[in-house]
Every structure is written in structure tokens, then in C-alpha cells.
Length: 188
Image (cartoon, rainbow, N blue to C red; front, side):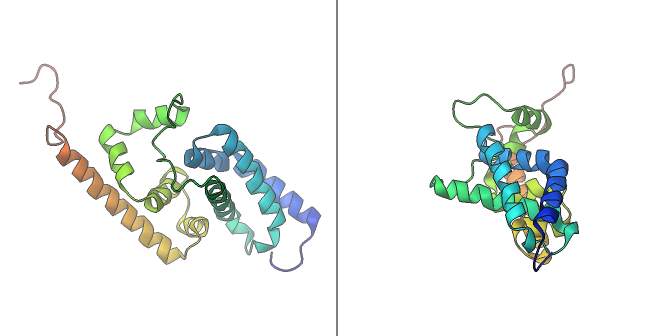
């Protein structure tokens, strides 16, 4: 897409991307920021930036990862603007907020020790796991979304999975029962 670009072509392309990926970009920003209205606003901002920066898209087949990269940068810009130093943990909730639907689903699928283990690993590694596992990005899409090479993305994801494994083992060993499952009723 490099070079001179046609505004009409860009508008049609970004509208198509909006139709395909609006929901998942919003969900990603909501997980990062934990504020539905802000996530909705920043989702719109991300698609506006995609239109304005259409010429930076080198390959149309990488458009999804390109969108995630734009959304990630839009969120970081907002966080910096607010002078927030770090992301809220993606498994946590804002103080005083009612649990989100995602949080309720995650609680149903993730054990407490898994949630605590995720909170122990570095934010960048959590972001890589979130993109790779929950959004099912390919290695190339993950690399583009994180703004790193494919090799660096693979290495980051490998470190993230290892960090999670170690944190989960630590969580289970810190448990009062040593991480053993509770006995079933009726068994002795």
C-alpha cells in the first residue's frame, strides 16, 4: 500500500476492516483499559488512524495485525496522557466497578491460582498471551501487533508461557494444601 493512496480506496478498505474486526478490537481495548466508554472511543480512534495511515499498510493480508498494532498504540497514548504508569491486570476489575461479562467468563474458566499466576508475569508477556491465545493471532500477526520481529514475538510468547508455567507452579506450591485437589465427597 506504500506510496500515493486513493482516499476512496482507503475509505472502502477501512470500512471493510471495521465490519470484520470492530468487535475484536473493542474487546481487546476493553481488556486493556477496563472502561467500556473509553474502549469504544479508542476503537473509533484506531479505525480513524487506520484510515489516515492507510499508506503505512504494506500488505493487505497483514491488516488485522496492523489494526491491533494501531489499537495498542492508541491505548498506550491514552494511558500516557492520563499519566497511568501500567496497565490494569487484564483479569482484574477497577475498584468499585461491577464485574464485567468477560471477568465472569474468565472466572468460570480460570482457577483462582491461574488468575494469580497470570498477575505475577510481566505485562508485556501477558499482552502476548492475550493476543496469541484469546484473539488467536498467528505468529506474524502477533509480531506485527507487538511491533517486533516474528522471531522476537515467538521468543516473547515462549518466555510468557514459561513464566506462566513457573508462576502457576509457585501459586500451587504456596497454597495451604500444596496445590493438591480437594478430596471428593464420600471418599476417605
